[in-house]
Image (cartoon, rainbow, N blue to C red; front, side, top):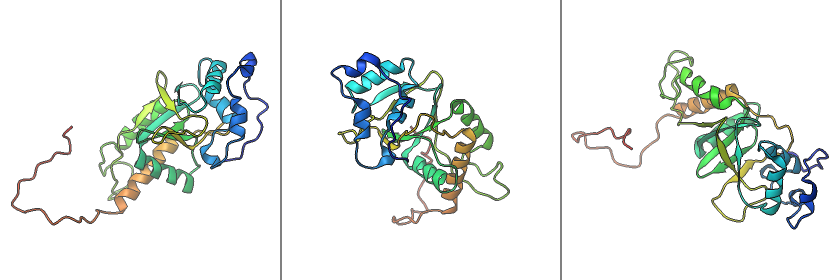
Length: 232
């Protein structure tokens, strides 16, 4: 991600900037550490633009720069919510072999991939059409090509809201945090086709690794075996 550059188009909060709250943009500018995981002033303005009242959102962040926020989906971005391990593999594929990613965050053991508006509506139908959700080996992958299952993806779009990490580094452990933080007023966001491609790549890669070797002794051949995979 790029280093911080002064954003002359950043939204201003008028008189609210001079109140007893901190100067959030000065705070973002003075941060140290990994640039990829830090929100810039331009990125903060983009995030605030997703809210119905961007100036009020910026004012709240000035008052509480280390607190997580809640933003609606569907206008500036959608969010695809995946298990952390699968999401990390998707991210590796997107950056190593694909076009990269938009902003990415983690929260409660899940990875949040910010995507183009409309992705939440289209991606589930694309996954269903490809039959990835069933973990089957049929579909467009070609004869004899095996695939691993894709875990359930939660797609947040119009009418949904997501928790976003603090703009500045959070002091508490285990809370939401940025993996790839927004750093521009116009970030590139992957669409459903790009995320489908990443799911396919990760699924095929997991299948090609083959079964793992167990450290446990083989099961008793005479024992009864019960399928508990569907038990909740």
